[in-house]
Amino acid sequence: MGLIKMFKEDVDVVFDQDPAARSYFEVILTYSGLHATWAHRVAHACFKRKFFFLARVISQISRFLTGIEIHPGAKIGRRFFIDHGMGVVIGETCEIGDNVTLFQGVTLGGTGKEKGKRHPTLMNNSLVATGAKVLGSITIGENSKVGAGSVVLHDVPDNSTVVGIPGHVVVQDGKKVRQKDLDHHKLPDPVYDRLNELETQIEQLKKELQEAKGVKQSGH
Image 1 (tube, helix red, strand yellow):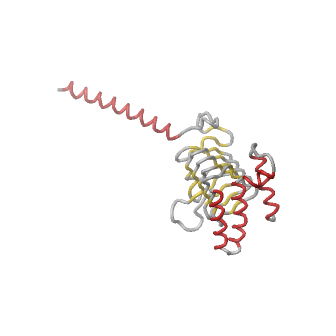
Image 2 (tube, rainbow, N blue to C red):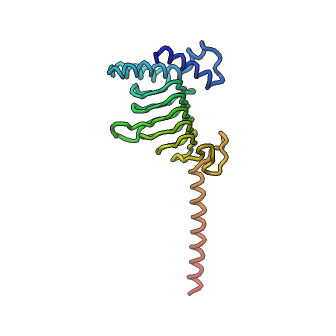
Image 3 (cartoon, rainbow, N blue to C red):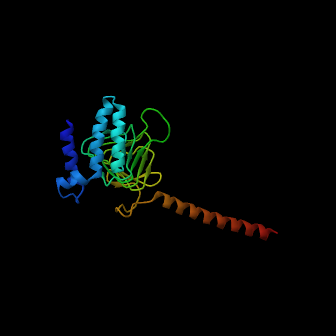
């Protein structure tokens, strides 16, 4: 597919995803996520032709203007949408499928100085919400969602929702893995749940310790 046709698709997806979009003129001139995507498509074309320095210059100018950093080596599919976008970081070996949506503050990064494929793969129709971090050479499956603020370190199956630090799958194939309300403003918090469990265990240990002390004192 030619760049011009892909550019048009990038504009059309904004209208599909963002109800605030009013006109082509407004979208083309004011949407930083769109500008970053377009700059990346040009930078990636240069990168594939081994014009590495030019590709990095284009990506850094885009980063300065949009607040979105996309390495020119990243592979991004059709109808890619970045909503708002400030603080988004996409690493060199990322592979992003079609119809993927990212929100502001998302990091698709590595976990160290490993070589080769070291960044995530996002399959078709996946979504990564505000502030989420997806780290390492892992795969987010098709039609899957990563909740806001999550840190994902392991593969996510297709048709799943993952939340928490570290990320836990809470919905898969339309069925709740954990009995939690998944309203957008009431996403489950595995860390909070674990802290509650630990607090309960500590209270139980205190009770057992007090009982043991009582037995010991009565023995005297």
